[in-house]
Image (tube, rainbow, N blue to C red):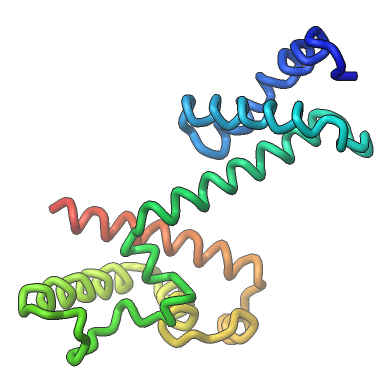
Length: 182
């Protein structure tokens, strides 16, 4: 199907608008979306022989593009370290909010004060959440309870738990950004 230059051009023309629209719905940066769509076509054309035609071409291309978007997010996440996101990082053991007075990382009083202020701002933002959300966030990230235990405790479904966590994170992020902007 994509053996000639004309076939390649037709495939690109037929699917590029859809793929660009899909990419824009995920990343909202036109230049980056165009780059990812272009990379998708390059990958697809180089692997055309391995395409087994068990799905439509558009589905296959969308799958490739989606993987490229996920790869972009992973790369961007490693380049940008957001202290707010670190609070929710499982690998941190949920200990970013605790001051370790004997920590060698805090070498000056100034750093200790800054960290204490950050923790206080986080506590202030947590207190502004609805009571149930505050309890869920505290249980999940500070007390490190399992999700099923939290669902039973608060009488919610697992999907509702993740919606609440997502919305609470957004509110906390906005609250902290507002505090840092002042």
